[in-house]
Length: 385
Image (tube, rainbow, N blue to C red):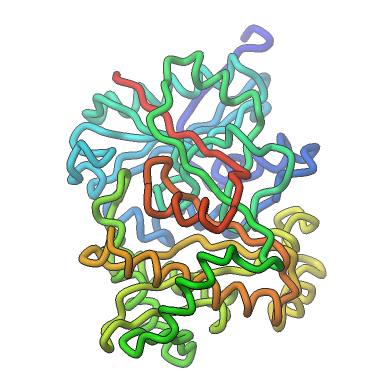
């Protein structure tokens, strides 16, 4: 066999799956802004026996070897629920995806992308939208702006050269996902404060924190609102009951009652906002492992986090209220109440909202009204096969 021969093959064994996970840590170790995810979390993401996404999706992992050494990886996947969505909403019939790509060089990247395309083509795919890792609910898109600071919890970070490599493989941007940041120690603009004050005087509006003693019920309520609120969004794929339960279980340890609020209108839950303390501030120095001392450090931190950053990964208002003044008012009240708690109880000084679709006029308008600025952009690409 000639030296430097690149061999690509599907991941079949436990050791190959371990290599797939481990490669990202080796390739990104020199990047001060890459946050190593916990290895067991990464392993769970790609494990059909653990991740309920595999109840409606199929995936194949590939690794690239050069001279017996792992130099690249990629996942190819098809989601039956994404195939069932209207084409105008981003996915739809014939649409597959790839993601989780890591590569030492452009030659390897192109070989991996081509292999993923072959697998998707063989499975009836005519169009690709990606990268997705693995679902749109995990870490969608490729970081294309904002490489100068680490991502917050549950957001991705990628090598800058990947953008040119992907575009050279024939991919074109289809949608931008933005995150917005703001200094939460500063008061909101006067107009925003007046809107919030008017809402707080409205007896028909009630804002409450979540009850963690009824966590499963509260998670189902919130994610039920989410499925309704986001159902017309580009890229939306509904969460199944199993996925809702799985997400709730994963998030429970970093969910704090005063950072999650539900808005009720005439006694009916109509909006919510989830804010998370930035776990990445602890993970960045742990190299993806809780051993030997990581467990103790993390458990101590989880008792009462003290953080610089908090992130709003999810918020939503039921569809029937969207586009109304009430929707904007509820969102601003939720943001203000959680902002106050984040500063007073967790020492936070910076908030991040997102990701938000580039054409989500309502949420982008709220971010601009709050005088936020875009700090990261993730790009989703498409290609016709």
